[in-house]
Amino acid sequence: MNRARPIAPASSAAPKSSMAIDNLRGIVILLVLSFHSVLAYLNFLPASPFRFDDPPYLWRAFPIVDAERWLGFDLFCAWQDVFLMSFFMFLSGLFVWPSLDRKRPLNFLSDRLLRLGLPFAVVVLLLTPLAHYPTYLQTATEPGLDAFWRHWLALPLWPVGPMWFLGLLMVGDIAASLVYPLVAPHADKLLRLSSEARWRPGRFLAAMALASAIAYIPLELIFGASTWFHRGPFTFQLSRPVHYAVYFFAGALVGACGIERGLLALDGPMARRWKSWLAAALTTFFLWAGLTALVRDAGDAAPFALRVVADLSFVLACFSSCFLALAFGLRFARLPMQAFDSLKANAYGMYLIHYVFVVWLQFALLGLAMPAVLKAAIVFGGTLALSWSLTAGLRQTPLVAQVIGAERRRPVPVPVRVPVRGSSAGAAD
Image (cartoon, rainbow, N blue to C red; front, side):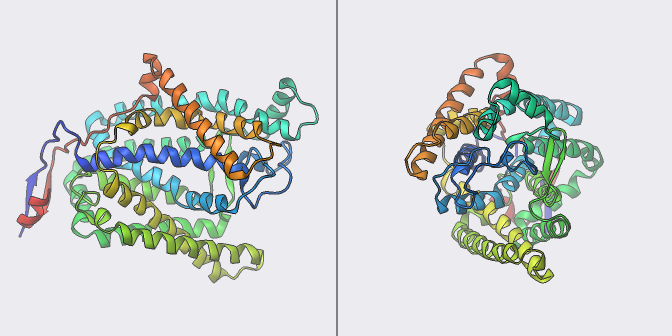
């Protein structure tokens, strides 16, 4: 028999599901740094670096091109490209409803603009040109800062590096703040829908995968997988913005009734079935890689059906890897990890500044006769140490800490009654 009962107040101690999700922040920043650290050593890159003034300015994705290569980095970066930004969106969405409920839309939006908008502007205007000066020097016929600045300003766009993601995340937060006043009066219905992720996880996950397929496949067929939109400092892949929105608002839906009592509970389907998610992620990734290679080899002659199947394989590979990451965190990262405390606290600042160190270290290693794996390890280790220590130092300044300091995301009780099915379901909460 269906019944309803209030949500229990959050305890002062961090629940283990929240601890696991929090620990993922430290793991994810390591993935981001490693991804950018190995880009110079991908096997598929051309023999020469991309010229700074030549469209379509592919140096924005590969700022340094080294002669040393390793095929394993291609697979590693392809896997991250498939899922990592969608995973970021889902994690960000998890805390949207509790934050909106606690702060209300105007305060929530002002906080997001402070923590996302201000760093975005500072990094894009100041650090991004600094990061790409070595890129210019690789192919420059007239080296020097003055010449670089002239060539930079002559570009038909303003490169933003990894900061493009913050622009999309700001759009998601603005949309959430606009939707909240419309949804809040119907919070019971929203939380009932949110609780479906616990009662019928298979149905919820299937609906999410279907929504992401509907969001991604038509846009990819129209624009292709690699076409980017550029307007000033804002840029994104034209095939993916709606796909990212699905993950963002799916995360918001899951987090609406608390991550402790739903899909991400320690006894939920993610943690219990992590091996199945691992198998699914591996299978769908290599399926996507094979189908994508067939489409690329066929070029414009690729059959429509093959493109659709390849796009569907991307959707499934992204979906499987995202939930593998969640399952892994819930299964193996659910206890306090003292070594990760500082990393988690500084993760956001490291994301903001790491690209400068990545590009300059890759540039410094050009011409040195050492294996690509060793070069990548040096770049990753140096970037990790430098961005971590600099962020920790910057956060000692109260004003900087207010912007890039760790935001403690403790589960917040939602002041509505959540329907619970049967006594056993209530006990599981």
